[in-house]
Image (cartoon, rainbow, N blue to C red; front, side, top):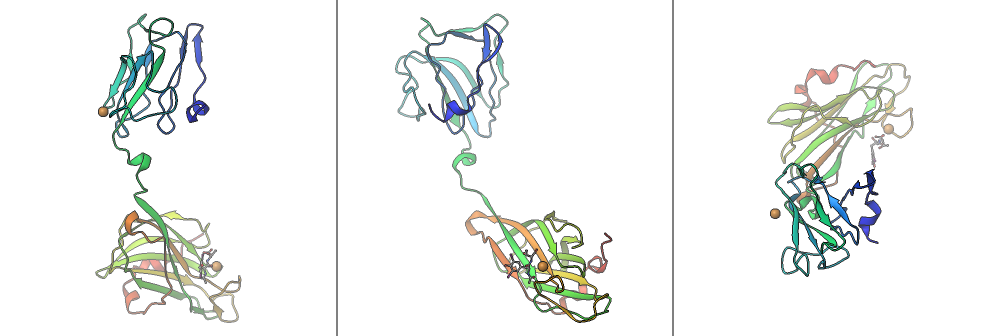
Length: 289
Ligand code: IYT
Ligand code: CU
Ligand code: CU
Protein backbone atom coordinates (compact mmCIF):
# COMPACT_ATOMS: atom_id res chain seq x y z
CA UNK A 1 0.00 0.00 0.00
CA UNK A 2 2.56 2.59 -1.04
CA UNK A 3 3.47 4.38 -4.26
CA UNK A 4 5.33 1.34 -5.39
CA UNK A 5 2.36 -0.98 -5.51
CA UNK A 6 0.59 1.16 -8.06
CA UNK A 7 3.34 0.86 -10.61
CA UNK A 8 4.57 -2.58 -9.71
CA UNK A 9 4.26 -4.91 -12.63
CA UNK A 10 2.32 -8.13 -12.16
CA UNK A 11 4.24 -11.34 -11.96
CA UNK A 12 4.92 -12.64 -15.42
CA UNK A 13 4.76 -16.36 -15.57
CA UNK A 14 6.90 -17.83 -18.32
CA UNK A 15 6.15 -21.23 -16.92
CA UNK A 16 4.47 -22.23 -13.65
CA UNK A 17 7.82 -22.20 -11.81
CA UNK A 18 9.58 -19.16 -13.26
CA UNK A 19 8.29 -15.68 -12.99
CA UNK A 20 9.86 -12.30 -13.31
CA UNK A 21 9.10 -9.49 -10.94
CA UNK A 22 9.70 -6.18 -12.57
CA UNK A 23 10.88 -3.87 -9.82
CA UNK A 24 10.59 -0.24 -10.85
CA UNK A 25 11.14 2.49 -8.34
CA UNK A 26 9.09 5.66 -8.62
CA UNK A 27 10.81 7.99 -6.22
CA UNK A 28 12.98 5.90 -3.92
CA UNK A 29 11.31 2.76 -2.72
CA UNK A 30 12.96 -0.55 -2.00
CA UNK A 31 11.15 -3.73 -2.51
CA UNK A 32 9.83 -6.19 -0.03
CA UNK A 33 8.54 -9.59 -0.89
CA UNK A 34 6.92 -11.48 1.87
CA UNK A 35 6.47 -15.19 2.39
CA UNK A 36 6.96 -16.20 -1.15
CA UNK A 37 9.27 -19.00 -1.92
CA UNK A 38 11.05 -18.44 -5.16
CA UNK A 39 14.33 -18.78 -6.86
CA UNK A 40 16.14 -15.94 -8.52
CA UNK A 41 17.63 -16.72 -11.90
CA UNK A 42 18.83 -13.41 -13.14
CA UNK A 43 18.94 -9.71 -12.46
CA UNK A 44 18.50 -6.99 -15.02
CA UNK A 45 19.00 -3.53 -13.57
CA UNK A 46 17.11 -0.74 -15.36
CA UNK A 47 19.40 2.04 -14.28
CA UNK A 48 22.41 3.91 -15.43
CA UNK A 49 25.43 5.25 -13.66
CA UNK A 50 24.28 8.80 -14.25
CA UNK A 51 21.72 8.42 -11.53
CA UNK A 52 22.49 5.32 -9.49
CA UNK A 53 26.06 4.69 -8.44
CA UNK A 54 25.48 1.26 -7.09
CA UNK A 55 22.66 -1.05 -6.17
CA UNK A 56 22.86 -3.98 -3.83
CA UNK A 57 20.08 -6.44 -3.30
CA UNK A 58 20.15 -7.94 0.18
CA UNK A 59 18.16 -10.83 1.48
CA UNK A 60 17.27 -11.17 5.13
CA UNK A 61 14.68 -12.39 7.59
CA UNK A 62 14.04 -9.11 9.39
CA UNK A 63 14.52 -5.95 7.41
CA UNK A 64 15.04 -2.63 9.11
CA UNK A 65 11.59 -1.62 7.93
CA UNK A 66 8.83 -3.32 6.03
CA UNK A 67 7.39 -0.22 4.50
CA UNK A 68 8.51 2.72 2.49
CA UNK A 69 12.18 3.61 2.29
CA UNK A 70 14.86 4.79 4.62
CA UNK A 71 18.35 6.16 4.60
CA UNK A 72 20.29 2.92 4.86
CA UNK A 73 23.67 4.36 3.95
CA UNK A 74 24.53 5.90 7.33
CA UNK A 75 23.43 4.88 10.79
CA UNK A 76 20.39 2.91 9.71
CA UNK A 77 21.10 -0.57 8.49
CA UNK A 78 19.42 -2.68 5.90
CA UNK A 79 18.40 -5.64 8.03
CA UNK A 80 18.08 -6.27 11.75
CA UNK A 81 19.56 -9.72 11.35
CA UNK A 82 22.45 -10.44 9.06
CA UNK A 83 21.93 -9.13 5.56
CA UNK A 84 23.01 -11.48 2.84
CA UNK A 85 24.17 -9.91 -0.34
CA UNK A 86 22.43 -11.46 -3.30
CA UNK A 87 23.21 -9.16 -6.11
CA UNK A 88 25.29 -6.05 -6.64
CA UNK A 89 25.47 -3.73 -9.51
CA UNK A 90 27.65 -0.71 -10.08
CA UNK A 91 29.03 1.49 -12.79
CA UNK A 92 26.80 0.44 -15.67
CA UNK A 93 27.58 -3.21 -15.13
CA UNK A 94 25.83 -5.52 -17.54
CA UNK A 95 22.99 -7.67 -16.22
CA UNK A 96 24.09 -10.68 -14.24
CA UNK A 97 22.79 -13.99 -15.44
CA UNK A 98 23.20 -16.89 -13.11
CA UNK A 99 24.43 -20.01 -14.84
CA UNK A 100 21.88 -22.38 -16.24
CA UNK A 101 19.98 -24.30 -13.57
CA UNK A 102 21.46 -22.12 -10.81
CA UNK A 103 19.30 -19.97 -8.57
CA UNK A 104 19.22 -18.37 -5.14
CA UNK A 105 16.80 -20.01 -2.79
CA UNK A 106 14.65 -17.61 -0.86
CA UNK A 107 11.52 -17.70 1.26
CA UNK A 108 10.27 -20.63 3.25
CA UNK A 109 12.83 -21.67 5.85
CA UNK A 110 15.82 -20.11 4.05
CA UNK A 111 15.85 -17.15 6.48
CA UNK A 112 15.50 -14.89 3.50
CA UNK A 113 12.00 -13.61 3.71
CA UNK A 114 12.63 -10.08 2.59
CA UNK A 115 14.58 -8.36 -0.07
CA UNK A 116 16.04 -4.97 0.64
CA UNK A 117 17.34 -3.05 -2.31
CA UNK A 118 19.97 -0.50 -1.41
CA UNK A 119 20.58 2.20 -3.96
CA UNK A 120 23.45 4.59 -3.67
CA UNK A 121 22.47 7.51 -5.79
CA UNK A 122 25.21 9.20 -7.75
CA UNK A 123 24.14 12.43 -9.32
CA UNK A 124 20.91 13.30 -7.56
CA UNK A 125 20.31 16.53 -9.43
CA UNK A 126 17.84 14.74 -11.69
CA UNK A 127 15.76 13.96 -8.63
CA UNK A 128 15.83 16.97 -6.41
CA UNK A 129 18.05 19.52 -8.09
CA UNK A 130 16.29 22.63 -9.15
CA UNK A 131 15.67 23.12 -12.84
CA UNK A 132 19.01 24.29 -14.22
CA UNK A 133 17.49 26.37 -17.02
CA UNK A 134 14.30 28.36 -17.31
CA UNK A 135 12.52 28.97 -20.61
CA UNK A 136 11.22 32.36 -21.57
CA UNK A 137 9.79 34.44 -24.36
CA UNK A 138 11.17 37.55 -25.99
CA UNK A 139 8.55 39.40 -28.06
CA UNK A 140 9.62 41.86 -30.73
CA UNK A 141 6.78 43.94 -32.12
CA UNK A 142 6.31 47.02 -34.23
CA UNK A 143 3.96 49.65 -32.85
CA UNK A 144 3.88 52.40 -35.46
CA UNK A 145 4.38 50.89 -38.90
CA UNK A 146 2.18 52.39 -41.62
CA UNK A 147 1.82 50.54 -44.92
CA UNK A 148 0.83 52.89 -47.76
CA UNK A 149 -1.74 51.50 -50.21
CA UNK A 150 -0.34 50.07 -53.44
CA UNK A 151 3.27 50.39 -52.33
CA UNK A 152 5.07 47.20 -53.23
CA UNK A 153 7.43 47.00 -50.25
CA UNK A 154 7.23 48.45 -46.73
CA UNK A 155 9.59 47.31 -44.03
CA UNK A 156 8.86 47.27 -40.33
CA UNK A 157 12.20 47.36 -38.52
CA UNK A 158 12.48 46.63 -34.81
CA UNK A 159 15.65 46.65 -32.70
CA UNK A 160 16.64 46.76 -29.04
CA UNK A 161 19.91 46.51 -27.19
CA UNK A 162 19.87 43.44 -24.98
CA UNK A 163 20.77 44.27 -21.39
CA UNK A 164 20.06 41.11 -19.39
CA UNK A 165 22.09 38.02 -18.47
CA UNK A 166 22.86 35.57 -21.28
CA UNK A 167 19.98 33.86 -23.02
CA UNK A 168 19.96 31.02 -25.48
CA UNK A 169 17.31 31.15 -28.24
CA UNK A 170 15.98 27.76 -29.32
CA UNK A 171 12.81 28.54 -31.27
CA UNK A 172 11.19 31.47 -33.02
CA UNK A 173 7.76 32.42 -34.31
CA UNK A 174 6.63 35.05 -36.74
CA UNK A 175 3.27 36.79 -36.88
CA UNK A 176 1.73 39.24 -39.31
CA UNK A 177 -1.69 39.43 -40.88
CA UNK A 178 -2.21 38.96 -44.61
CA UNK A 179 0.20 41.63 -45.95
CA UNK A 180 3.35 40.09 -44.47
CA UNK A 181 5.81 38.48 -46.91
CA UNK A 182 8.76 37.49 -44.74
CA UNK A 183 9.83 38.09 -41.14
CA UNK A 184 13.46 37.71 -40.01
CA UNK A 185 15.22 38.06 -36.68
CA UNK A 186 18.91 38.54 -35.92
CA UNK A 187 21.47 39.07 -33.27
CA UNK A 188 23.80 41.93 -34.12
CA UNK A 189 27.14 41.73 -32.31
CA UNK A 190 30.01 44.06 -33.22
CA UNK A 191 28.20 44.91 -36.43
CA UNK A 192 27.87 41.28 -37.46
CA UNK A 193 24.40 39.92 -38.17
CA UNK A 194 23.57 36.34 -37.21
CA UNK A 195 20.19 34.95 -38.15
CA UNK A 196 17.98 33.62 -35.38
CA UNK A 197 15.16 32.74 -37.74
CA UNK A 198 13.42 33.69 -40.95
CA UNK A 199 9.99 32.55 -42.02
CA UNK A 200 6.94 33.41 -44.06
CA UNK A 201 4.11 34.54 -41.79
CA UNK A 202 1.71 33.00 -44.30
CA UNK A 203 2.94 29.54 -43.33
CA UNK A 204 1.66 28.03 -40.08
CA UNK A 205 2.70 30.50 -37.38
CA UNK A 206 4.24 27.87 -35.16
CA UNK A 207 7.51 27.97 -33.27
CA UNK A 208 10.29 26.73 -35.51
CA UNK A 209 13.81 25.74 -34.44
CA UNK A 210 16.33 28.57 -34.59
CA UNK A 211 18.56 28.86 -37.64
CA UNK A 212 21.70 29.18 -35.49
CA UNK A 213 22.50 28.07 -31.99
CA UNK A 214 23.75 31.29 -30.43
CA UNK A 215 23.86 33.13 -27.15
CA UNK A 216 22.60 36.64 -26.66
CA UNK A 217 24.65 38.71 -24.23
CA UNK A 218 24.48 42.10 -22.63
CA UNK A 219 25.32 44.66 -25.32
CA UNK A 220 24.11 42.62 -28.28
CA UNK A 221 21.34 44.08 -30.45
CA UNK A 222 18.28 42.04 -31.31
CA UNK A 223 16.85 43.12 -34.64
CA UNK A 224 13.86 42.01 -36.69
CA UNK A 225 12.36 43.03 -40.01
CA UNK A 226 8.89 42.36 -41.40
CA UNK A 227 8.45 42.92 -45.12
CA UNK A 228 4.93 44.00 -46.08
CA UNK A 229 3.18 44.83 -49.32
CA UNK A 230 0.49 47.47 -49.66
CA UNK A 231 -0.73 46.00 -52.92
CA UNK A 232 -4.46 45.42 -53.01
CA UNK A 233 -5.18 48.06 -50.36
CA UNK A 234 -6.75 51.42 -51.04
CA UNK A 235 -5.98 53.06 -47.69
CA UNK A 236 -3.11 53.12 -45.20
CA UNK A 237 -2.77 49.95 -43.17
CA UNK A 238 -1.69 50.40 -39.55
CA UNK A 239 -0.78 48.21 -36.61
CA UNK A 240 -3.91 46.95 -34.91
CA UNK A 241 -6.03 44.04 -33.84
CA UNK A 242 -8.35 43.48 -36.81
CA UNK A 243 -7.59 41.56 -39.98
CA UNK A 244 -7.62 44.86 -41.88
CA UNK A 245 -4.79 46.01 -39.61
CA UNK A 246 -1.35 44.52 -39.55
CA UNK A 247 1.08 43.23 -36.94
CA UNK A 248 4.82 42.64 -37.09
CA UNK A 249 5.95 40.15 -34.45
CA UNK A 250 9.09 38.11 -34.02
CA UNK A 251 8.97 35.86 -30.95
CA UNK A 252 12.13 34.28 -29.56
CA UNK A 253 11.75 31.31 -27.24
CA UNK A 254 14.89 30.99 -25.15
CA UNK A 255 16.33 29.52 -22.02
CA UNK A 256 18.41 31.17 -19.34
CA UNK A 257 20.33 30.07 -16.31
CA UNK A 258 17.87 29.50 -13.50
CA UNK A 259 19.57 31.85 -11.05
CA UNK A 260 19.21 34.89 -13.26
CA UNK A 261 16.34 33.95 -15.52
CA UNK A 262 13.86 36.46 -16.86
CA UNK A 263 10.76 34.68 -18.17
CA UNK A 264 9.44 37.44 -20.40
CA UNK A 265 11.04 40.31 -22.29
CA UNK A 266 9.93 42.49 -25.15
CA UNK A 267 11.11 45.06 -27.62
CA UNK A 268 8.83 47.57 -29.32
CA UNK A 269 11.33 50.05 -30.68
CA UNK A 270 11.02 50.97 -34.30
CA UNK A 271 14.60 51.12 -35.39
CA UNK A 272 16.70 53.64 -37.21
CA UNK A 273 17.45 52.95 -40.86
CA UNK A 274 21.14 53.38 -40.02
CA UNK A 275 21.43 49.99 -38.26
CA UNK A 276 19.39 48.17 -40.90
CA UNK A 277 21.67 49.24 -43.74
CA UNK A 278 23.67 46.10 -43.04
CA UNK A 279 20.83 43.62 -42.67
CA UNK A 280 21.51 40.47 -44.75
CA UNK A 281 19.71 40.69 -48.08
CA UNK A 282 17.82 37.43 -47.42
CA UNK A 283 15.60 39.46 -45.07
CA UNK A 284 14.14 41.24 -48.13
CA UNK A 285 13.43 38.14 -50.14
CA UNK A 286 9.84 36.93 -49.80
CA UNK A 287 9.45 33.24 -48.99
CA UNK A 288 7.19 31.64 -51.60
CA UNK A 289 4.22 29.82 -50.13
C1 IYT B 1 0.11 44.77 -31.57
C2 IYT B 1 0.76 43.43 -31.72
O1 IYT B 1 1.72 43.28 -32.47
N1 IYT B 1 0.25 42.42 -31.01
C3 IYT B 1 0.83 41.12 -31.10
C4 IYT B 1 1.92 40.96 -30.12
C5 IYT B 1 1.49 40.93 -28.70
C6 IYT B 1 1.30 39.75 -28.06
C7 IYT B 1 0.99 39.72 -26.76
C8 IYT B 1 1.34 42.11 -28.00
C9 IYT B 1 1.02 42.10 -26.69
C10 IYT B 1 0.83 40.88 -26.02
O2 IYT B 1 0.48 40.85 -24.72
I1 IYT B 1 0.75 37.90 -25.86
I2 IYT B 1 0.83 43.90 -25.68
C11 IYT B 1 -0.20 40.04 -31.02
O3 IYT B 1 -1.27 40.25 -30.51
N2 IYT B 1 0.18 38.88 -31.54
C12 IYT B 1 -0.67 37.73 -31.62
C13 IYT B 1 -1.12 37.32 -30.25
O4 IYT B 1 -0.01 37.07 -29.44
C14 IYT B 1 -1.99 36.11 -30.25
C15 IYT B 1 0.10 36.62 -32.25
O5 IYT B 1 -0.52 35.68 -32.79
O6 IYT B 1 1.34 36.66 -32.22
CU1 CU C 1 28.05 3.49 -4.60
CU1 CU D 1 -2.01 39.84 -35.07
